Picture 1 (spheres, helix red, strand yellow):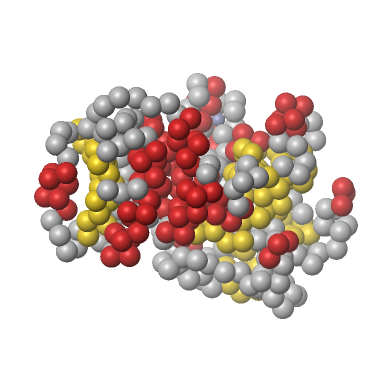
Picture 2 (picture 1 turned 30 degrees about the vertical axis):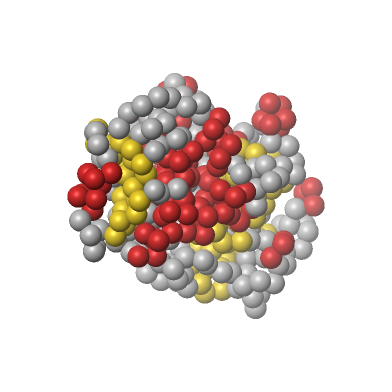
Length: 355
Ligand SMILES: [Zn+2]
Ligand SMILES: [Zn+2]
């Protein structure tokens, strides 16, 4: 995505939060996203087959457990403490360009400052696809999936009372793909997105911040690494700093992309580009992040919002998300069209996410 804007007045951040948290705005975000589509998991969907709304991604799954269904719903008996099952299933990546496999795990155990989440939905992000295609090196075997919604079912031992009060048992939550440690030099300065521990341990090693995974196969005890929280699983362990409450008004499935596509777009618009009312904005590449950028630009009061993509379907849907103009760069002179609509200008080359 490339964004071009001009400058104008400022707008309070509460406006964007309000817009993003309204059901009417959350729905189109996920339905349009080619790289981010949410997979429903667990109880409300027991018996349904795993499904994927993405036109760009048709995952194959090989079920290595004894169940005859491909749904991630568990039939595990309730054998763990606190009424939790003793095992769960998750989709495991073992080698590039091979199907993910459904495998049985011991129920993951959260440590201090971590929560066990019963996963309700998990998005499929292009980052997951990069790992699965071998384009993004990552420890394997691993469980991918980093855009989750779910329910808090357990706090790790010695978790502080403030965290327990903020995220009590039974809370509906949404997870962020960056799970800040809260203690490193960047986190202490408020730059959670640069968290040293997250990148040193999770992205580099597939573990949480004590250097260990929380995922172990039930049959052999083999450790399995975690891409963020390893969300394509019935349960996942998430550090408390990577979770926030999901309001009752927001559905689990459509909200799963909030923690990756939407917050990436929010950071782009609010922090990097600092879009203000009256600005002109061009968003190039209308995938999960780009379609969220359009909605956020609209919420920030941008006047000209130009969407550019090379696929007719995305160009057509762009106006639903707030674009005032939409251009198919494969058929039209995108630069010329943008220059017609934007008069002033600062160019910000933020991300290149043409999809
Ligand atoms: Zn993502
Ligand atoms: Zn940190």
